[in-house]
Figure 1: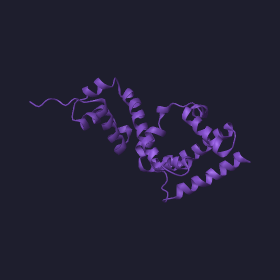
Figure 2: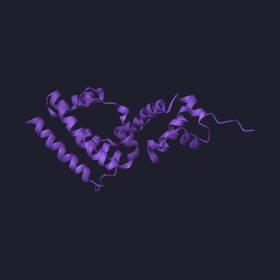
Figure 3: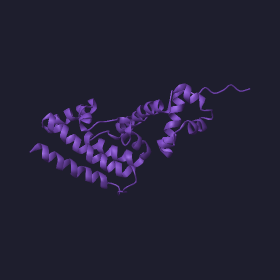
Figure 4: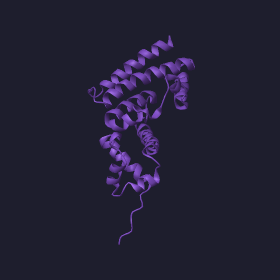
Length: 186
């Protein structure tokens, strides 16, 4: 008799990634994971106390995937602009992962103040303040306007609300960046 395969957390997360990427997180459940892994649901619940716990762990796991995706896409040039373009392309090319990461309740933000106070966002604002020669508060407002604009385009692409020609979103992003920058540098 062949030994049973030991199902690890990593295997469960990889299966969750595959199902989410192909079919959306809404199709991830204990049965779909067990089917993909070729096991019963017992190993899943022996590694994760609940599907809610799995979702939180998987959100961080998928976030690391986005971080690697962004780091690769942002090589050379204006990193702020490239980040916006990367965000839009991620929504276009990885719509199910984008929806989980950036259009779900997992983040549980309560208004823009939570976004302003996020350490990564504060770091971006500090860099923008230095590179643009504007106050830190102006840089935070500029960054939030750019994020809201960029997220709007990305959300429309991820949800298939709109289809844009290659380069169209990037052109719009550049126009918005110039317009928002002009509001904060005059």
